[in-house]
Length: 488
Image (tube, rainbow, N blue to C red; front, side):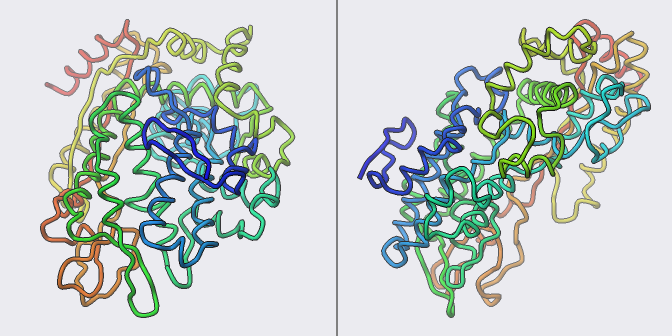
């Protein structure tokens, strides 16, 4: 065996000169060394500058430990290696600055009109003579990030794996590229293990989420990611239900699972949804969209992204498409004599780390079981709509530039699509939920259905917020005008 020493997981093991080692050394995998795990968040958390490469090694290692724990390596070495390969390659399709730039595809700023708050149009980039890049850039970037409509990196990664390029055919050998790709996207269903194998890489509790929670927290100095990873893995067991096998946790793991789920939520609140981190995410994505506008070498839409993954794109190559290219192209962009005023302003904010000011912020927690009837969500929505309606005039009265102000809204559930009405007589649930086998039950059920799980209550909740950002010099006036307009 060979190994890599990791500051988060300790020793990461793989066979000396084996398939995993050879895949790690492929240039397409080495590209992930140059992709920041947290996007532009290191502008807020300076030590949070770890990469998709170190994260991918961590996901591989945690997957290896999980598979060994449940005995799949011994029973079916080939399918075990397929899952481990998918874990290693799961982020091979990531964009520069990770999710920040992912949300820019296949969308573009809407053309014409005023600042607007409508849904963005899913079109190609604006023509070079269009003024849309200036009049809509920041607001569109904010809406694209909040709506999460972008071309997902997992789809691009599966395209890379299945493309027949990048050295994949030689290194995958007898392993199925299609199986690896479908595990990455979470669509793989095995004839014996069902969704259990892909769930190790992509589910409510998976090696991916476990590693980034541990790694993000350690690098930025947060305590939210201090989950009991070894204990959780030790509680994984393999069970049989009819002709199917599945992976579930012992009931003893419920407190540790609750801790994991809530830690993930708090980490999002403290890191990903931090007001400055969200702002720089919007700014950095806006600048990438400006690069798309000014630089034809970048892929402009989903079709060109697919060509990039297959090494068939006429512009830059996949191996060049990384964070270094992003920051270098911004330096070049700043020197263009024809650069629009909005992009100039955003560049100065990012280069000098002087983000716009939050002039309004509201949050709400609401039940996801019956959103339409939730009174707190109704009240929040009414306040949000009132702010949106009053904002253009508040900006105008403050003599602020509407192109440099933006409204950002986002939402995050504690748990995705909980199954709350499950009962043992229903049998093994066909769901991405974390499965727990409680004492006295013949089959495992969803964690959120366990009566004594803290997540049973928390999984019913979704959290949403909105923020209004404006330049520091005019922000106080915008805030005062908003308060007056809303009668507060």
